[in-house]
Amino acid sequence: MGEDANSVSVDELLEYCRTQAGLLSGSVERMGAEADALLDEIDDEMAAIRTRLEERPDSVTGPESPSSAVGPGGREPEVDLEAIEELEADLEQKQTIVEAKQARMDAFQSLAADYTDLATTLQQGDEEWRDALERVIQFEADHDAPAYFQDRQTLLEAAVADSDADPELGVDE
Image 1 (tube, rainbow, N blue to C red):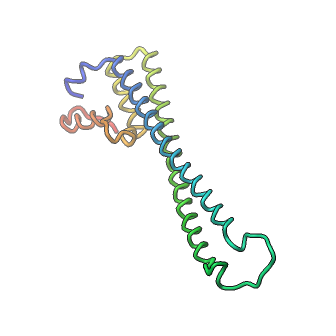
Image 2 (tube, rainbow, N blue to C red):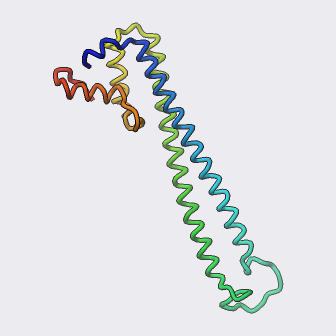
């Protein structure tokens, strides 16, 4: 990296790793809240489906009557069935989104733990700042860290941008 890298200490790299872990944990909390909201919507929709199914004329127990194309009150039972099927499709879509959020949350939690482990390793090590910096950059390349930080530049991205500006620096990705 350029001249600015000379001011990076191992302690600053430790703080960087801890900050990254904290940001990832915050993202997990936000995604968890979003997933909880979707799960609440799913519960509400399930209740609505149950209510509609219970209101269907053919679910009522009573004396049998001749079947007709039109149910009580002149309503067609098929219309209710279509609405229920639409609710089910919406429900399935929301469940898929919740599952995707859970998988993403797991990935974010895993990377946060890995950043914390890296900070612990750096803290216990006796590395020079350059070796520690190289270790963090390699860690981010190995874990595709930039993909997790849409609004923040990682050290890997900064190193790549710096090496693009100064080809002699050469950063392995």
